[in-house]
Every structure is written in structure tokens, then in C-alpha cells.
Length: 540
Image (cartoon, rainbow, N blue to C red):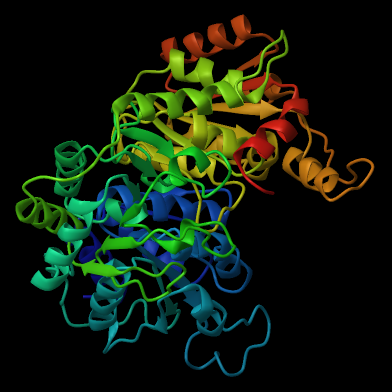
């Protein structure tokens, strides 16, 4: 069997049915032909960053590494932002790139970049495949990618070996995950602390999304049995429904949570990965019980007890060690806090503002919508105000916090879940970065709904410049297209809205569309309220 066929078969036998990328003329081009022959789906994107983000999100929701593909040199380097997303947002990813053949690699200078050296800081493993090691390296890459903390691996595929004969070792590299069990002493110590706490607060982080799905039921049972008010980080939204009576909403470590955190006497961190925390010193003095599937080795916060093992099993075991608790929180305190957040961030008046766009979108889209959000001025408001009902129904780049995430993530979700409603709330700055990818959505008939906060400014930078004391923002304004005409030029659907009624109508028409095409909805907003809203949320 030729190496190209063997790689393709091994991916397919492992349940990976899609590769995302932008090929070159070397081994990636050969791989495409093998994929075509073996009915592997290939999604051609307009940019390699998009391919890597899409593959990462595919990995997050399927539980298998996503795979992206690129040319050598500039093509490979263009994947860097997407690979960094996989690293810092803990997504399993395998990236493959062309490489000069063995006779040329030490001789050629044109487009020569050492991918392995370039990607070492961005991956958990970076290496090159050979005729003899290809299968064992892919097996290793799978394991490294899937082991907590999950992340990306990269392999060069030399051009001169892609059509060479190899052993037919094409069996699945998937295997049952090894589920660690926390030691009994830690479980008992955690249970004892939680049992005697009068005002415990749980903070659930992104590691809750690693598992077979049972962990969400264990989380819900744990929270309900002991009545513990629960924050979630942005990546963990929906792990406990935002509609649940014990849900406090999102945790940012900012000003908004003060009334709850000042009363709290124990923090129960469940899958709380420090990569999602604000880049400053941990400011809470309460003892922390750490529950996660890997150790708290980065110590951005110190835990008095660490229960390291499968999160679902750990929560179930702690429940067995606790027959009762001293919790004194009242449900109306949780409801009062949630109302405080909403009242603090909602604006009044006739202008269409970001918070109004979020609320209207929430009211008009189905409760089980898969929502993605971009990074920028709108991000803080979206993660605070958007309510997610189900686990893994809200997607954002929080560890890397990269602009240009929303549309690629939405396309990946629509590919995996063709019968679900998928939408994106994105600033126009981030959307402009991925503007050509609407063509990708059209080509694949993905009816993703992109709702754009349109003010033609990098409004977060405006807020930060004013916060620093400058008299006025500078260098943050940009030109944007007529989104309706742009959409129509590619065969997509397009609307522009300046009022609440126009926005509601546009969303309803997008939902009612039957042409299978993506929809762009421009919501022309007044950005003047951002500064006051951000001041209420956290320090900038």
C-alpha cells in the first residue's frame, strides 16, 4: 500500500471522516487524491488558519483529533493561529504539511522553513513521518493530542515518500481513554471541606468538556444534591444549563461577581483550567478544592485539596462520601445575582446596542442553537448575556482569544451537525478577517447565520485607549463592504438592520430560508455604551 493511501485509511478507520485545508503541490496534493478515491471528505478553505480552527472545533465536538492539511512554508505558517488555538483552548488536532523530499531538504532554500522548529512552541509534539515510522508516529500523535491537556500535534510529510510502499498498518489509532481515578484520601478530604462550607461556590471550567458525556450528568447531580451556586467559564457555558436555578452565569474574575465571591467561603474548581483566567494574580483568598482530570501543575491558584481523575467519577465519589452539607445559600440569592448582571449590562433608549442584539438573537433563535462568538468588544457582553441550555452548545476562543474565530467555528459545527441551527455573534473586525470564508460556506451549503455587530471600528481598542487617558481613539476605524451586496454576490443571504424590529425580521427570514445558503445579518449598533458596560464587568 502507498503511504498516502495508508494515512487516509488509518484516519478513516479511526472515525475521522473529514480533513480541512488548503493543499500545495507536494504530498498534500497526493493525499487529496487518495482521499477522493477513498471517500474521505475534504473541506477546501480560503485560508489555512480557517482550516486549523475548523479542524480544532471538529476535534472538540467529536472527541477525535481534527485534521488539517497545508502546503510547506507560507501555507504551513498560516496555520499557526489555528494551531495556537488548539494548544491554548485544549482542542485535539493533527496538522499535516508538505515538506521537501530527502534529496532536497538540505539543499533547497526557496520557501524553506523548518516547520518542526516553528511549531514546537505551539504543539505538544512536532515531528516528521517516514516510511518506517509513519504508523507509530500517528499512533503517538493521537495519544499525545488526546491526553489532558488536549492539544495539537504536527507532522511533516516529505514529498518523496508519499507514494512509496509501506506496511498495511491501517488499524484505528483510537482506543478507550484511560480514566484516572482520584485517590480515596483526596476524595474524602474534598468531601469534608465541601460538607462543612456554609457558602461554597463552584466554578466549572473547560476541562469539564473532556469525557464521554456522563460528566455533565454527574455535575448536575452534584450541584443539585448540595445546592451549590455555580459559575461557568466561557468555554464551559452550558455544562450546567444557564437556565438552571443554581446557575450564576459566567465567571470572569471581575467586578460583577464581587457580591457572590465576597460571601463565598469555599471555591470548588471543577475542570477549572487557569488558561481561561484573567492574566493577573489570583485575588481570592478562600480555600480551593481542585477537581479535574490533570494536576494543578501551573498553580495560578493554590488548592488545599486536589482530586485528580475523571471528573464525572470524582463528583460521583464525593457525593457518596457526603450524606449532607452545611450550605446556607438561598435560591433567591442566585436569582438576584443573575438579575443584577442583566440589569447592569442592559441599555435603554432607541439605539440598537450590542446587548440588545444579543437579547433579540436569544429570543428569536431556538433554545438548542449552537452558538459561536468572536473576540472583540462584543465578547464580554456575549459571554455574560448569552444563555446556553446544553453542554457544548457555545464556542469561543478564550485561551488564545483570537479574532476571526466565530465564522470558522460555526462552519465546522454545521458540517458536523447538518440538521442543527448554527449561528455566530461576531464583531465586524473579526468577521472581516474571515470574510472570504463565506464562499466556503456557500460551496458546502452550510446555512450558518452570522450576526455582525457593525460599527466599523475596533471598539475594544477604542475603550482601552480612552481608559489609558488618551483624548480620543486613533487608528481603529476601517472600511467595510455593503454586507447585503457582498452576500448576494456569492449566492448567500444578506440583511442589514438598524432597529430592533428590522433585526428580528432578518433573523426570522434567515431561519425560514430554504436555499441552504449562509446568512449574513448586519446589525448596525451604537458602540458608545461599551465603556460603561466593560467598567461594570471587569478591569480592562
